[in-house]
Length: 173
Image 1 (cartoon, rainbow, N blue to C red):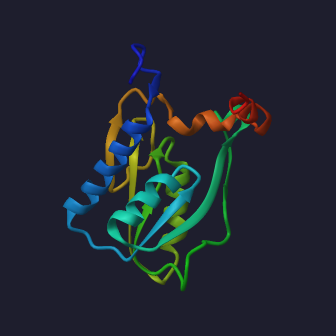
Image 2 (tube, helix red, strand yellow):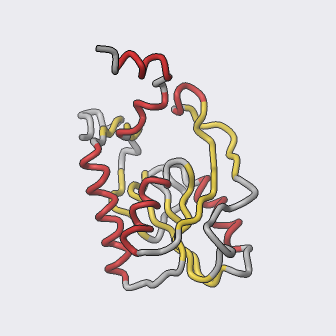
């Protein structure tokens, strides 16, 4: 649900799952065949996992981080992992890069540039759920374009500030 001022988008678990399924259909309907999925941790892990299952393709993970301060709401320096984790072999062939959103576009652009420098990758395309108007990078596949570039409140954000002691109180009878 987008707020009246257009500055905040609140997404429920049901909406999140539906949008991820719509992303899978966009990729499928394009007719493009790929060999592996590379998701960006943390935001791309959930959609990457679903797409890996739907397309029955191996899932690789690359960790990136730029939102750390203030429960993950302040963007800082971009850190990209040196290594990619995958079940076997190397990242190669036609690769689908998956994240949850293209916010500023900085992370996706940096990762795409790094991956395009890998000779083992013959083709690279990117897929996200949301693209903000403020983004300088437009993925090959996306579900929603957000013209007001709102802050997206995703359903799992409650865990950003939830600590074990508070979680334990939830289960006290």
